[in-house]
Length: 567
Image (tube, rainbow, N blue to C red; front, side):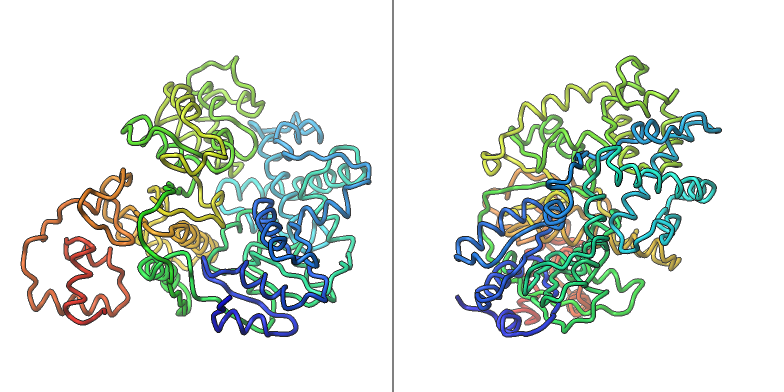
């Protein structure tokens, strides 16, 4: 096959290296060619999740590369720690009420203190198991808590949270209670394994577990770390950007074969928002993808709640689609991380207390009390479901039934009128046409929040920008983006049924770009031309220019060509 110069340099390299690859840059293809040139060596490829693992296994097998073993961090750790050990597994993890019961936390002073404490213990468990330090007390849990009320609670009960976290870990270690996925990964790290491989390929390094990075760095094998700093979206789950932590020779993959230059430029523009608060970034993405008609259409949202709202809007309120598919089980979008259901929240909202199954919510006397708990516990996901309940109320059961009735099986996914996914669920995936929901952070909000230079806020902004970048780069051929995300101006409706008949739409457009623009039939003035050229040379994307001049994307592109600014 024909390789780019960047790919060829990686394949010819020797020793430890790190590869920074933009979205759609042919990472897997490059790693396959790297492995193909090293057939005499035992190679381990560490995939990000099970879906990527299965896909990678298939691709390596197609090339007859049987010297490559494909694992995820957890499947590898499972084979060392759990298999044949006598441990039982708690696959779905522990819910807050279960932790309360196991640690006998009842009877503490203060309203719902035991549940709030258990929630922090659960978070501390996750933090420790995914971090490199060998002891719980070597970590400062408080620094990971950002919400004001939650931080106040964590500070007040610091010793209790740490002590109970150690007790819970001890119970899992002794086999008194089932172990979690996070626990056996941590135990694997602490066992200091030496893996029987000559080369280890560690993919998605920007979202690595600190524990697994420690295992990786401890190996005598040749180490290849691959990722994209700007696709780090799991810091909330205590992932670390290993690309910034290792001092290996540096290679890049900057050619994207997924999308064309229009989408590449927009992705670059969004990443450059980081320049509001950090040193000047240099990001180059060259788009080699082809435009044209697409088959798969998807709505990508930042949150579960934002996705549910968009699905209800398109299927029920506007009736623009008849069939749909949710990445992952549709039921998972109606639950918070700790297992609380949107139905439980609705039953609290309507006063049907007898129908509440979740013990935490059953212990609340009102929605106000639940919201107070959410603030103290830092329960962001549950808070989002509360907003959905407030928006739709008693219509929710009927709406969710209609979503389920219209849902296609996985094998028929590409036949759906629309695929729905959060950014986290569709990482590594791509679709012909993508419409972004309106729940991403806007440029104006990033600019405003960056002014205080608060390190905690800046870390959050980094991840918010990365979420938008990942969402944008899921698109192969067409992208529709709410106007207010880029400019702060209220957008036209996001959902579009398709390209307007008889009108060609550019690769990416503001949602509602098919509408007639106010200046569509007015002549360009010399002053307009000078300003257009200046803004374009400053790196402003076409949609931004279309908003400034109140013209369509196509009109802007045609004028730039006429001025000789673009070819």
